[in-house]
Length: 276
Length: 228
Image (cartoon, rainbow over all chains, first blue to last red; front, side):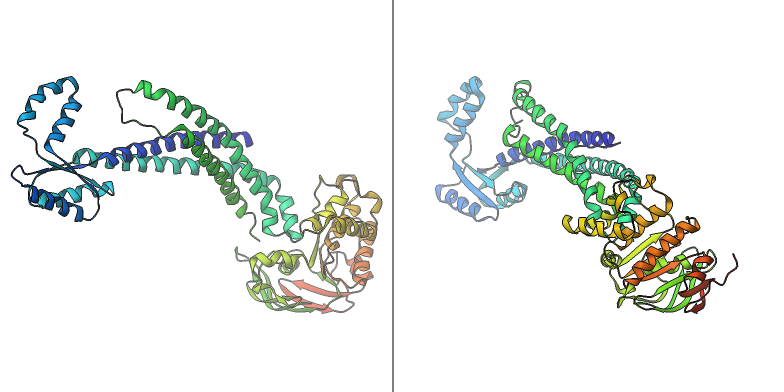
């Protein structure tokens, strides 16, 4: 039975660790992409230099704007040509008669405010259009929220299952020792005196149960971290959290969860035996 | 020492075990609790060591009113009360010495004083040469002596014995009574529920008779009063 509950904690914690690693990495990826979201404010072609400067100042005054950068149409064309690689040569001829707008590149301090800021900018004078991958950002946020919610729900369900199993194991130990507990109470033992051996047992079950998951995390994450980039070369944005310190932090978290599961399970099962 | 005022106890199944009990027991008294089975003797005892709570009324022990003691302070109350049962309630895997020391370990006495105190008490009950035996190697009377030693090892002010001689033959019972009298003579209050007419009528002490949850008789140097 002791083995069964250690095994239960082990299984639970491996699953918890996998979900945590997934959720945290997704979170990180989303955050990376969010960080890169910029608002391109296309300035009307008819705007003169004063109007452009004025627009820049107005944008800077909007709440939540972290950075405003001016990029001339020549600059824009150059980066367009660069990003097209060999195909970009076709655009070189346009250098004489640049059809592009001057642009203000705006970054929001908090990525979630991007949309609101973009809306405010579009109302300003001399603005032709505002571009900021709205759809992509919204979907990303949504997906991320779902993933986080589902991951957390699964983690909580797993943790409770493990607590239940541990508390059952300990209940059996307690029933076997109920005479002893009864006598302890009779001669005036305090509840904490009676409780601590079970407390230690619970913590031990939890910690023993978390050894294998920790090994799995460290080994597994090392492998994935060093091999995934090769496999998913096409998805550049998949940028895993670095092995060090993430794998160690995750292991620590798993150890802590294991100990808490064990202690909680034992406290739950001892409680009803301590009623006077 | 022990006072009960208008104490009633009704269990959750509707059985009234005690009905409006008023009693006062002084320090150093030796009291027999007699009456038919199911009359309420055990409930009376359980109320004193706070295994059960009265439905109504006040119980005062050593100046402390039990209903006002917080749940977490009950262990400290119990340390002033030694309890002895008919079935001894010894831990079978522990030696005589360990069983007695157990009561001191749970109240976190220093190992040195545990050693001294346990030897003293084992001597008092006449088991000093059987300290290393386990309960199953002892006779019933010897096991009950171990239980008594455990009950008195932390110098309680009251010893409650629920039919301590109930499982013992008459000769052995006398031995137990000698030990209890000895403890009583050192100033410890003793409350003993018993069905032994012979003991009550021979060692004359205060007799409290309970029937159907009521005290029907309270008599110094009384008789057992029931036909066996």
